[in-house]
Image (cartoon, rainbow, N blue to C red; front, top):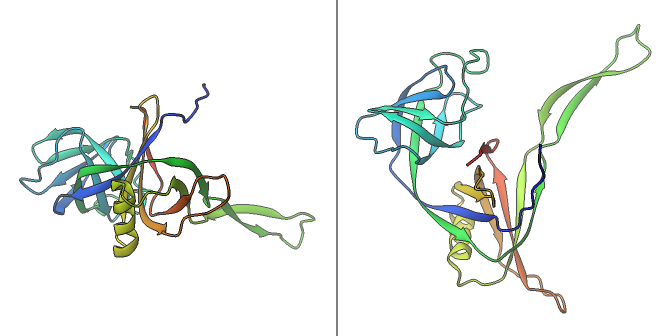
Length: 216
């Protein structure tokens, strides 16, 4: 149990990717182990984007915790449940993230979506409704940055806004914990202009998968 302040957290956007490498097998294990094609180049501690037939793994950004020739352990991915991760169907590909660019001058962040949706129902003989959870609404993260179009983070966010290609996003908290997202990035290039307030631009992340979190 504990409480923390976000002061000092830093946010990074992926600025480079390696070539896509086929993943021919993914084990039902904790952590899941993916078998990559030869000469994949992924090393321990590298961050990779995963494309997989498993919906709960697809589009996630994960870290390689161990590498044995072509077998790469996907840190934090527990695929032991064959009902959630059907055996033999998780194959796909990975891309190594080769560089990160810091998003500077962040004023505030806020999250949206992710709310649990429900189906309400009632039988004829009942005098009260029941409900069961269904899906969750689409999730997003809004980031307000002080306006400076010359900063490398702004330039990269602008590029992501224009090319409409997903980017990995990494948040490093003050205690060195890490939060990883894969998202489409949108940038409102018109800054806010309010008397006696910092001019700011809004960046929006539209998330493609649930975040992956590491303690360090």
